[in-house]
Image (cartoon, rainbow, N blue to C red; front, side, top):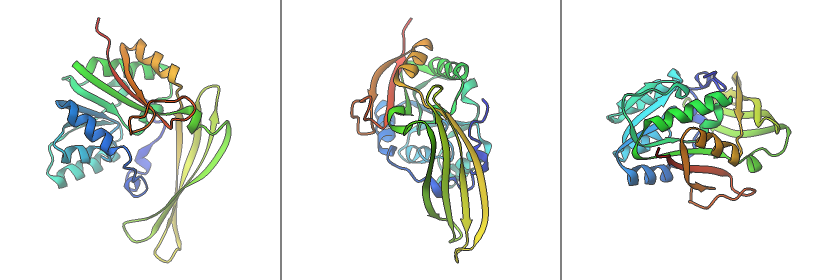
Length: 255
């Protein structure tokens, strides 16, 4: 997979500015309810992985970014957890066993921006589902997320870094409605304890917002069928023009 977002550039600071926990209880509930072997795709530095491991989930983590996985491995070691951590491109997913529960959190499927790779990824996931297995994928709802075509600017916030300084993250992006593609970048402004600038970074971002119909067709083509579609992590039913997310619960179509 072409790295539509090269998280290796920000792996060392990712946990400083990505502190979201709104979905943790959802994943804990679903993984523990299903039981068995759990496969987390695009695990990153373990934002979701570590809470699952603390709950005793039998977890395997996959991500293509070695810099992010190095941080996850350190957290797993420090916590004394058992976890199989695999560096792999999920568009080429190939593991020796099947799983009872597979999920892609944090809208990460949208980072696979070409159709061929999207289809291949979903086909691989279907192949890795055990009998009665469940697959979850989360996506942003384009009707809510896009904000219309054209340029968009924003500030993700200012965060206190480990050395007592601050990190301010801003972004600029452009949405192309016809293709669903979003192109842009994030800027990282580092300052010391006194507010003096000490560095800058820039990371390009590219992802594709998929409509409900697009994703459902991709899934069907890969042999997956929809069991439920939620619009948020409180299990609210999806509403086309209102729901912030599309949270897909799927299973393999039986031949």
